[in-house]
Amino acid sequence: MGKGFSFVAGAVVGAAAGTIIGILVAPRSGSETRAMAADMANDAWDNARDMYEQGMDQARAAATDFGPMVDAKTDELRAKVDLARERMDQLREQLNDAIAGGNVTPAADVVVESVADAPVVDPEVAEEA
Image 1 (cartoon, one colour):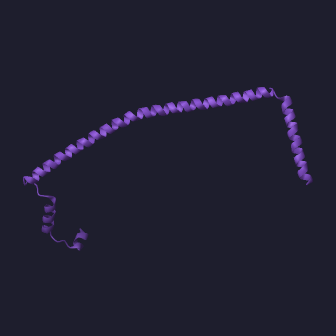
Image 2 (cartoon, helix red, strand yellow):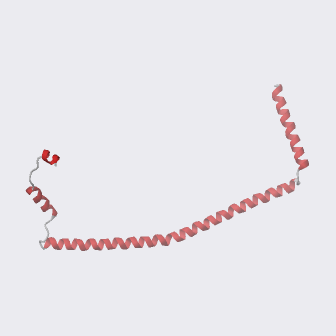
Image 3 (cartoon, rainbow, N blue to C red):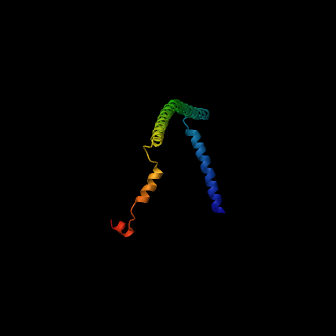
């Protein structure tokens, strides 16, 4: 218990001595130091607020620029989709007219006919080729 008491007593004496020396050699009075600390805290707060406001302004500007760009791209995409639909309708009409005119055989009939007419191939011969 003697070592623990000595340590605590030494810490208390050291803290007291440090406090007294700090007060005696301090370049400013306590009120000046507190005022200076308050000024530094206010400056830091003002800087943080300014940075926040600048960030918000940049975010607003980016959002303002982003909206019209999205609208333009959306309009461009809609125009391309409409053009593709018109082209698909034209091709569908041409194909229906060709089938109705008898100029084109439906694909299902072609596949059935070609399979029925195809020669039978020996699998061993097909592997060698």
